[in-house]
Amino acid sequence: MKQRVTVIGITGGIASGKSTVAKMLRSLGASVINADNICHQLINAEEIKNKISKKWGNNVQNKDGKINRRALGKIVFADKGKLLVLNKIIHPKVIKRIKSQIAELTVKDKANVIVLDAALLVESNLTNLCDILLFIDAKKHICTKRAQKSRKWPLYETTKREKFQYSMREKRGMADIIINNNLSKVNTFNQVKDFWNQFITKN
Image 1 (cartoon, rainbow, N blue to C red):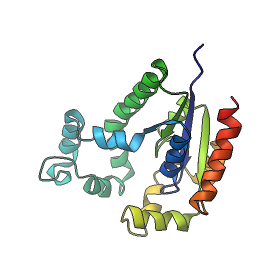
Image 2: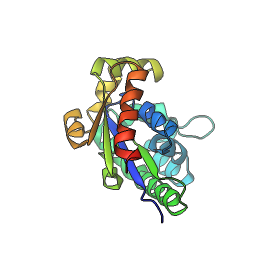
Image 3: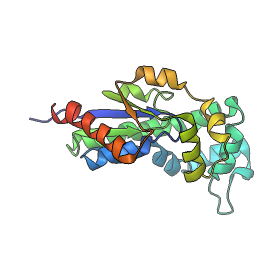
């Protein structure tokens, strides 16, 4: 008898540690679908690249013709209208790819647990695909420092981008489980293991 597949969605603030928790879940046996990686792959697909270049010109392209994501980010995260235009261009393709990967993993019986690591999980209505929602809780100043270190962002960038997302209160309120990622990785991993043992292993 085929075992039912459980889809875990991960949400939280920018640089809160969503991908870190996804990797921890992978180490416990889950398959991970990373929406950011899909975006990075699709943004230079011919159809999407042409639409972006037509909208914002060659100034968002590198010398090799590929989209310069940093240059594009400066444009769209300064204007909500422009961000909505970009989302309309790329999000349908990303969501289609995510659904396709979930279906492939499910049909081929490759996974019993699938983790969906998507920065805009809530904003893109991807929560409808999830059985369990995890909210990764991290204090604002910690997230800002992480983004500054790992992404080389200036201090104000995290706050600027979060204005275009649902509030942390809304995301937290939608979650089934909250993982505190304010302390050490060991502490976070222990919480992840507790969640896994309580909600996944016993099912």
